[in-house]
Length: 72
Image 1: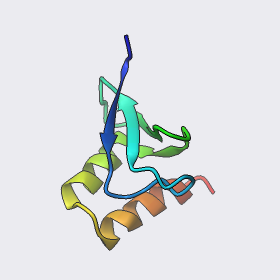
Image 2: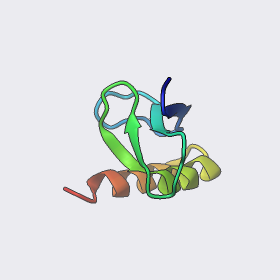
Image 3: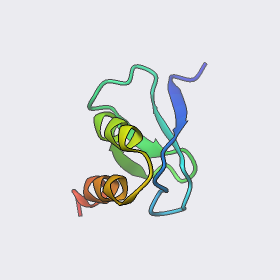
């Protein structure tokens, strides 16, 4: 039994271009969201929720870019 759940983000993974993401079924705000294809860390669950609420567009892309580049 899987303890994670897949969902689609309107913004693609910067590494592989996939929109399919994976998060813990618990979905705590600080749970990490990873690309379901290449397993790259994308953002935290609360950040993904913001992107999902905003929908596709440059604002959501900027949020993901900020989250991905935070550790760079």
